[in-house]
Image (tube, rainbow, N blue to C red):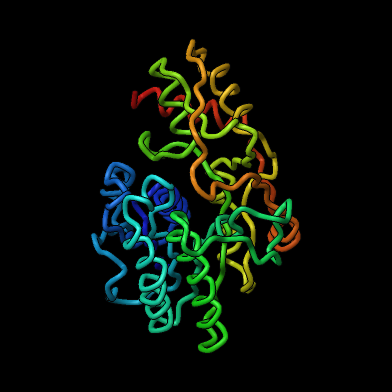
Length: 309
């Protein structure tokens, strides 16, 4: 197949590029490098089946030749990034989704949208099922990301219903692993960077809020399986192994052997109190469940970050 991956120089996107190249496909990676990095795709540069296009998909995207699949992963994805680029985040979720769906329609290609657990907001249902509509503040600081993704889902379903495009929606929960940026701003790179520099680990709030962390290899397997289906409604992809942020910080301190302590700062506006995916749909539809436990995944990720600090 010939596959277009937007945001392909980002954390998840670059792993998708690698997976499809390893399977023998041709990959066109599109990224404007606002948060993506060339270093993530350097290893593919000599591959004749790999092509990089530096482009902002908020503007129309033209790809010469046939395209079999479009995977839309372009977007700032951490609070640090989407608060720094709020308008760009809204545009890539709206205009970028429109443009990439237009490409899929023009090429008669299938389409996969990288949505997010943030469509559930600060949830009143736990764990979160795909049938839950969410609890989002549309005018809060985080609304630029949450609502961009909610709009993107609505646009994707409209293209499926109106034009018959074989669309897919992956609601991705917290994912981690090699190629994350140290300055990403999310809990894991923050904690690992601070631990390796022997600085205090910063917890926002009292640390009782929970998250569920999925290792990148498990997520990629789920995405590839979902993209190969004819299922069109959202599918949660994440690891249901839930942990408090304080417990998570303490795990990283133990694994790293760091002498760092922990400091507490005020909780940001609209920060979700709980987060855990109900993955029964993915299990039944895809035969997919995460395989890599958190200890092993954190060990692999820590080795990657040791090279960067």
